Every structure is written in structure tokens, then in C-alpha cells.
Image (cartoon, rainbow, N blue to C red; front, side, top):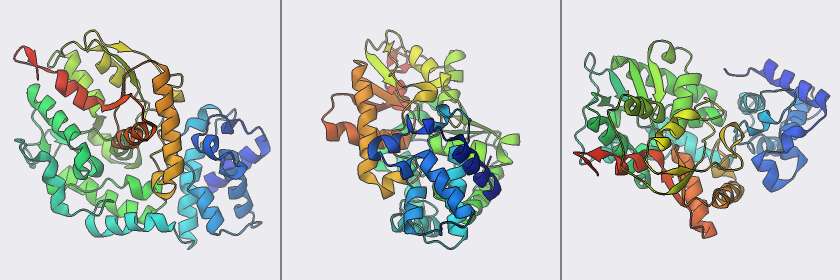
Length: 387
């Protein structure tokens, strides 16, 4: 549920009156910057001051507003259980509605969404590149029960194409009938919403929902945690009559029904919970059920896991605006993975894969960052043997 300005100011007021500051303990941005203004409490003090007219919104206020990953980790340390992520997202919308200029680093994202329907300045036709060499069917009204919604980042980042390919192969292996939109797929609007561009988000949401509904699909499957959270929680009507599921939930159902199975992996792995999939959508068990379905795999949890998982540093526009801080947060997470003794860090989000992989390479880590669907596809039994 979105937080309106009145609710935003209520959260800020409650936070200031509480005075505890316990939200700073696990805030990934505060851990790297160690500045009071960057902490959730510091941001709430700013929101309250602006609401009372004590402070006027300026460039520094914008920088503080966009220093948050919207990861919700601080909310699990908040004794008052305040919804700081929703308040911060509303704060960004509020600043833009008041005519305060957006961060210059975010301008290319907005222009690309307006011009191309994706944040990565790629053409419409580029969305179908991931499917090259696969026999996928276009989603057609009356013939599509399951819509495979790929999402901008998986579809347009060539280094991530193997994930949608892997999911398509697993769906084919299980005998699933599904359709894809290819070049007709539109951004879910997550990027626009997280950086406070509400009007742009609502425009994308309206058109995207119309395209999804025109397929007649009863279920939408996506491997992107950001798309999943957005379609399921931020579209007020869609999930009421079109079931939105993350690929980990979907694949777990196929495993439970014995439609896919896996070969042995005598390996120690650890799993990173993406913020949008974990804390925002509370999908913690499905990915772990999938890992446990792999014979001989040893799953070890990081010190911070499930609802207390540390953010990878790649969300909410922070990676674009503060790349060095984003990577520092990611390196901290990779270090936690190393401490488990696992050789493989598995996750289920394109942004987590991008950010953690880059951090592992920069740190010279021996931990391999692997997207879960790709791992499952490699181990899937086909004709009695793994692919």
C-alpha cells in the first residue's frame, strides 16, 4: 500500500517522538556513510521539518531522500514498527510534486522510460533478443493461461539472458503451456515508482495492465523480484483476478508435483534474500525448498538471512546515484557469504545478481554468484540425465 503525504508526516512525527534511533543499527546505507541525516531517523527528522515549514526542500534534501535503498531492513529493528520505506517513497513523490528537481543521475532513466518503455535506453525490438534460439509462443487472447513476464532487466541485459532462457526451458521440460509478450512487453514501472515518478508509474501501470489482461492469462510468472513486488502489490487490481507468482514459487509447485527433478550437487551454497522478494513480499521458503530439492546440496545460512538479510545495495535508484556506496554495501554482503564457507552465493533477482557479482569480482572473492533458475536448469534431469 502506498503512503500518502499525511501518512508520511505521521511516520516522521512518530519517529521523532520515539527518539530511540534503533533503526540505524542495521541500515545498510548508514553502515557505509555513518551520517545521522542518512539514517531512517535522520530522514524522518527532515520530513517532519519540511512538513512544519522549518526547512525548505533543496538539493541536499533530495540527496537525503534518495540515499535510502527502500530495503525495509531498518523496520525489523524499529521498536515502533514504523513503515519507513513507504514514508521515504512518499517523500520522493512529495518532493517531485512540489517541483523540486530530480537527481540528475535519474534523468536518463526517466527519459528512457518515457521514450522506450524501459529504463535502459533500449529499443522495443531488443526485448525479444533473450528468446533467440528458443521456441516460445506469443501470448494470444483465449490461448494463454500462463503469461511469462520477463521484465526489462532480464530481457535487455545480455549478461542476464540465461535466466529467462533457463526458466523457459524448465517450463518446457515440465510440459507447461505459456505465452510471452516479447517486444510488446512494457516496463512494470518499478523504477519510476521507486524514484518518486508517480505520474509516470501510473501511466506505465495502466498500459502494462491492459496488455497483460488482453492476453486473457490467469497467472503471471516472473523471475524478476522487482517486477513481482510491483505487479502483485503496487497494481491495486491486477492480483485480484490474475494470480501473480514469482518463478521460485512457480518452480516449487512443479517440484512438489514431481514434474521436474534435479541431479546431485555435492556443494555448499548460501542463499541471499532479495529485498523485494523477501521483506516486501515475504517469499522466503520457496527458494529454499528448491535448493533442498537438489540432492546432496548443503545449504548454509548467512548471519543475516530471511527478514534480516542485508540489502545488496542495488535498489531504489541508489546504485545509479551512489555507485560507490552501493558497491560497498554489496561487498559487505559478499563478505557475509564468504564467512559461511559456501562456494556459491545463490539469489533470485536480476539486480542482486548484477550488484553482488560485480562486488565479488571487485573484491577478488572466490564466491560464485549464481541466479537460482540457472542453477536449477543446469541440474534438471532430462531423459534421465542432467542437462
